[in-house]
Image (cartoon, rainbow, N blue to C red; front, top):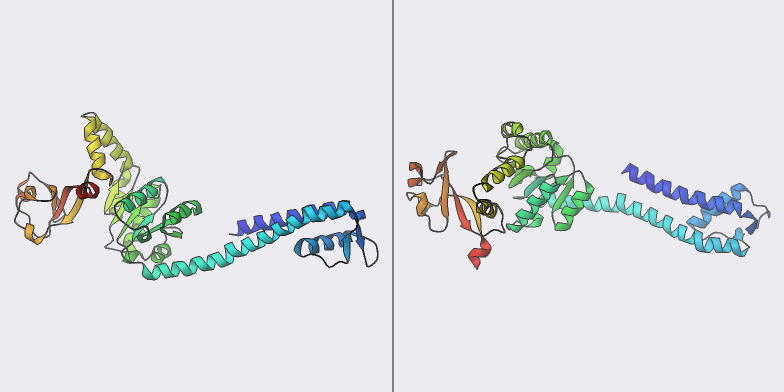
Length: 325
């Protein structure tokens, strides 16, 4: 903030200095009604009055050259300086006041929202995919330190907060305790793990998904409290390796993870009327795995032959667009 103000002040002083310099060179074209003599102090006084107001008439240009300079140069500079001051007041007073009031209003209503920490390439893709899957942009809160990134998120319709997601106060400001989920794409593994630690401390039951770049950091991320740890590099390697067995395998895997595909993976709890049935007998989707007491079982295993209360089902479903068509 102070750097921006300093640049604006320097720009204004530079414009004033240039006008003073020209007025001093062309002082013969000015007339002082008081004593008829133009001193350097008179030049400073006349310049400041001319730039900030329309002048008092005690010092006036008397030659055509001086009058043209005041009309064609000083007047636009006067308008530009006024715009600088008005813009500064808007940016650092009115807009900040409005943003604080707006954020306070948003914070009061935040509940069941999704928090995105980091709006780089990964975070932006996460937001796009969430919106495609039906999440309202207004239910997404983006945290980042980059004003340009926050502006991009704001234009989409997301709520934004400029701050450091590793700090307790920042996560409290986005009401992390009332969030539906948190997704972390900070760009650095150490930062992502620290954000995970902070979020888990403030919200013990919050589902947290985090991306890490190095395989060695997957375990620390889980120990920090991440519910889901994704390594884009490892996943890309899996896709590349799978392509050797057939390019259509990769196409189908891309379909599964994208909302735009013809099929999608879904996770849900077992329904009461499904208890006792086998995973393969589901009517709507193709069951591929169940989680029972946090342990995974494939559709071919004996545990999947009879569903139990508390089971979590992973199934392949037709996408909404295809199902509706």
